[in-house]
Length: 138
Image 1 (cartoon, rainbow, N blue to C red):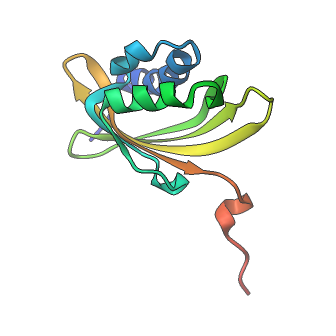
Image 2: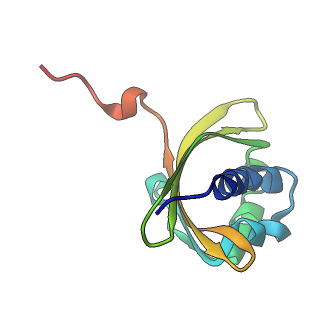
Image 3: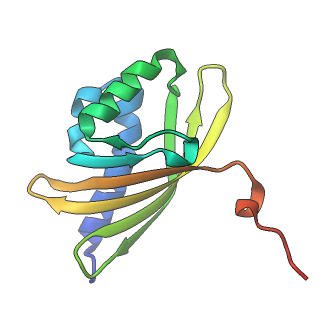
C-alpha cells in the first residue's frame, strides 16, 4: 500500500500530539490520538497493558507527580501495510521533574477512522542498554 504525503504528515503529527496533550494536562483530549479501544502495552515495564482511552487517562492521573514534565518524540518512521494499517516506530524522551531523563521506543499501529488517523495499539519499550543489548560476535 502506498501512503500519500498528506497521510504521512498527519500520522507524524498524531504521534507528536500525544506529548503535547499529556504535558499540558489535556487528558480529556486523548481521543484525538487513540481509538476508543486502544491497547497501550506496558508489559516491557512489568505492568499490565491498558485497554481503552479511559484506562490510559486514569493511569496518568494515578501517576500524578511521577509523570514526566515533558514528552519528546523523534525519529518517526512510518510504514504502510497492505491491510490499511500503518506501523509507526519512534523514539521517546521523557524529562522527569527532577531533571532526569528516560528513553523509550514507541511501536504504534495507526488506523484510519472517520475522525482521521488514530493509534489503535502502542507498545512502549524502555531503552536502557547501548546497541539494543547486542554485542559483537566473532
